[in-house]
Image 1: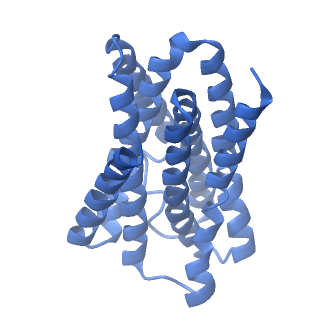
Image 2: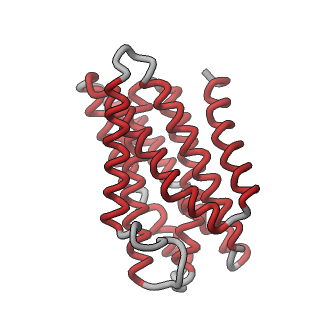
Image 3: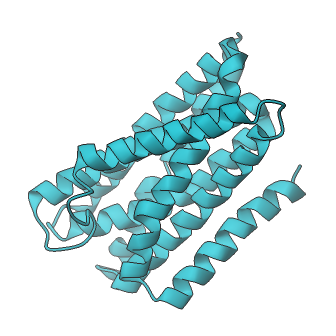
Length: 245
């Protein structure tokens, strides 16, 4: 395996992670943001993640072995469920409720664990082809910016400085970079695991949306606005990926 493809994966996964700190910009300009904006950020992140999950699963089901991506999706769901248990997100709302130090730490841990799944998605998409990999990285870059705003909102309630919040937004996405490069390397060396990895990434992303991002969207935003944002962003990702082929 030459170094150039790995360097490409490293470059685009790092660029995707580097958009997360942009979530502090609304706070730098306005000082704070209305709660409905938080719902909108979650909705936008949900839509882009759903679109990427759909595209990846569609690629996985194109092969002759449809069972492997389905079983991989089950593993992805199991992993995301475990992240919720490990971070304590099954006990209370990470991004809501009164501010406290434990909630802040759990939000950071959860963000890091979720970014690992997104790294797998970038890595496996890069393995399929460069176009899909770059598109996936760009879609998740926008998603990361929206999630960065949500994380900054949580940190701001404990008066964490914006510079520190921006740094934390980036560092919680470092697993995304590591897993993107690792996934690309492993799948390139062992193509037989490709459909399993596609399913894992898709299942993890969709389960995350359904169990965390969408509920947070509806809890903090206006239901009609959330529905429209999710629908148009998810549909736009799928449509744009098809048009750019």
